[in-house]
Image 1 (cartoon, protein in one colour):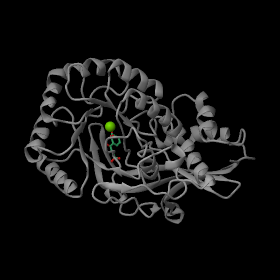
Image 2: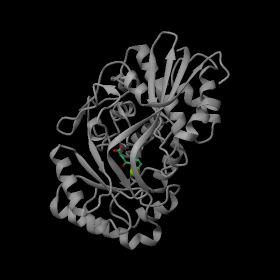
Image 3: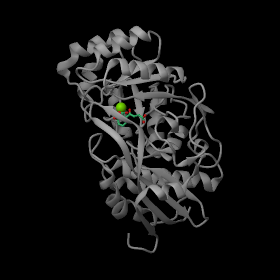
Image 4: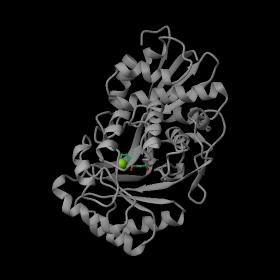
Length: 373
Ligand SMILES: O=C(O)CCC(=O)C1=CC=C[C@@H](O)[C@@H]1C(=O)O
Ligand SMILES: [Mg+2]
């Protein structure tokens, strides 16, 4: 693959519904899109999951741009590529900045698959022809409103309901949910809202038959999570704490988690995702695809990686219509009876609506091989 041009865009899309977690509320998304073009005329696409403020991790759309421009994109020109995994090696000298690295690396994976004429699922070694879909419901103004949302989403066929919890919005909420929905597959995401001082309180969650409790403690911890897991019956799933294969290896070996939420943007891309997947497969650790309110381009990547064999739990991979009035891909990602049919077309398998993207674009920069990036 000879990459000749890269287009970086920042666009704004309004979410259909504000999304509230223990760390804040998102009403819209500023999204950085990366398009890599090859001399053969193909375009590979991906998006950064970085948001406007450093509340989920330390990156933002504002940090992504200079890191891509100064340190990542010039590495694309170093030599031609035979496989996208070579990008991850070139990016090793750049510390952190996993969202930015992933967006560039994933776009190269899409380009690679399109040049080969195979789906991204096939390029990754995926197996499933359809994926089970879960939905993540943000914190609401009242328990009744949350119950109403769970009811409507359950009727839409979602295979798993994820609710957000935090101190003061947890035990009563889960008790009300279980009273109304005793049998649904239910999990809770705390987004780092508790500490080891809350152990006694967190042990009350064991009575709600949750499939997992996601990221109860600090975003940069695996030690306290190992202490907590030994005191809980419910499996802990980690999200924010896991940035690399090494983090996952240590967390699993320490007993900090029994389930892994895999967000390709959090771990720096699909090559690292495959390393983590292989480790979890060998250790028998179940995985699922986490979401970052992606547009259709990021969603398409998530659908493809959810076909890997160890992704045995429904992911946060709701269809386009759950988030957007109009998505930036055609067809949009749709769901029937709680499953998404995995596209078999080359690359991410959906057409990118470039005209619509350009109508939403606030900033755009073109980088070429013979330019000082
Ligand atoms: O994309 C989705 O539907 C999942 C959304 C979601 O749960 C999250 C999005 C962004 C950051 C987090 O607050 C949270 C998560 O922790 O998974
Ligand atoms: Mg999470």
